[in-house]
Length: 262
Length: 328
Image (cartoon, rainbow over all chains, first blue to last red; front, side, top):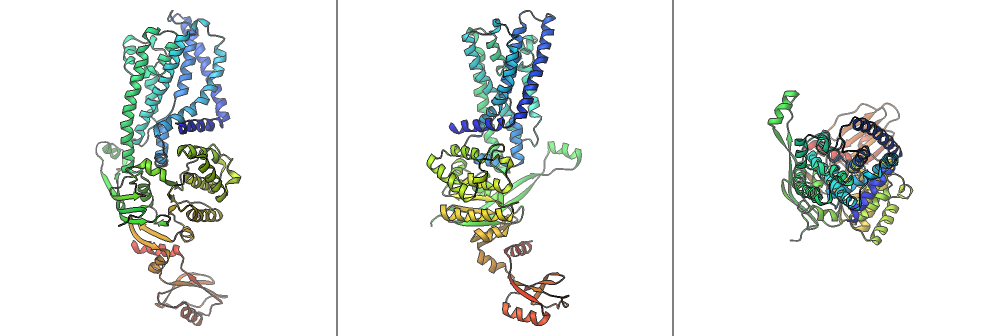
């Protein structure tokens, strides 16, 4: 277990060496937050929906970008790169699980950027968010639980898609598909409650809404405590199902590598 | 019959390579139907190694050296034949095997690019669950042996190729592996770094009794560290034996260097000598097998009257080149 923590730590430390990238991250985070402020001010001011307040919407935007930047990872291009230069064989020779190594690496890489981008946005946002939008204790707990599940689920999905790199020569487009589905069925840009009924029904049967949408719903108090079991157990089920599938794919990938070479 | 430490028996590896057809229509066709050619990368190779041996594994590019090393380390499945390393079948127990081996591929770095080497050391300590004592001792040993003190705290991206190679060798040895596979460790290095590495490899083998298989294109590596040599070409083993036997088998004799003050006389063709190279004031003459050096010297002085004459033992490199050519 400790070795994965060390991987996390080293990955974080590597990230911190890039000061100018961090600065660029702050600037771009602030700019896109500004756009969101103007956009929702205009939309809600025009009277789109009465049950969603401006302050709720800002929290929605902040939490979404926080959760996404915490969990984003292009596993496919990492695998692709190490297949091309042949380091994949070396990684197989390290005594640790490739999956957990990748997990520790991604979170180590993301956590620094996430904190650095979120803090300034939070500072500005705190002037605009009304206390009425903030959750009670029970909802905070549910939010934390579903965030952890959501982050792991996001990792499972990117990891699973990333493993396809073993069969494709080039796979940079995979993450485009993935992001498309996530944006559309995960409600990461526009909340799913604004969707037509049939689309939001479909989203219940896909893993994407459990990644950021449900955690945010807990935070905003939109999901009552007595129906919390549904999104949480759905996220758990998806996690179990996907990790069973990725185990099979991983074995097939290692076998393919062993037969055809790296 | 007792087993050797490393046993390779009738090892074969075939790769299936998809034929790619030309043009867009070819690309579309290949989506539906692909033709494959089979490349036999390793053909029926057998050898065995005792614990503590250092063996040079040589062959031209594409001869099957890296493929063999990958099967020995367990990342590649043999098409047929068997491999056993210290009683473990590598491709069946990749993880268990990995605990007992160290691998360095010359062109692939295992180091964190943005961090100092000490951070990668730290990772490897935890990867292998090394006891503090063993880790400390090995760190000190390799930092000292490979002369790494001066750059241990610099980010890897600022290091030279030679410094990175030293670091890669050090981390592959921190867990005291029984076997070390070195795939072209001296590639691209300057003369001084090469010497430091060769001395270190010899020292490690003597001190830690590590069994070492070393692939290289630099025959000076082989002469400096290996007593034994295995040569393969086109997947097949051509030679396996001591360096002395190798010379005896492939050596076509010795050569002589003749230097002239003025323009050398005309070369007289004869069966005993061959003019291998010539420049303005210098000849390299190869003598046939069976002539003694003394006779050759007297003979050549009488015929051509050079100012200086040196006898040179043929370099391993030239012998190897000749051997590859014979195989073609």
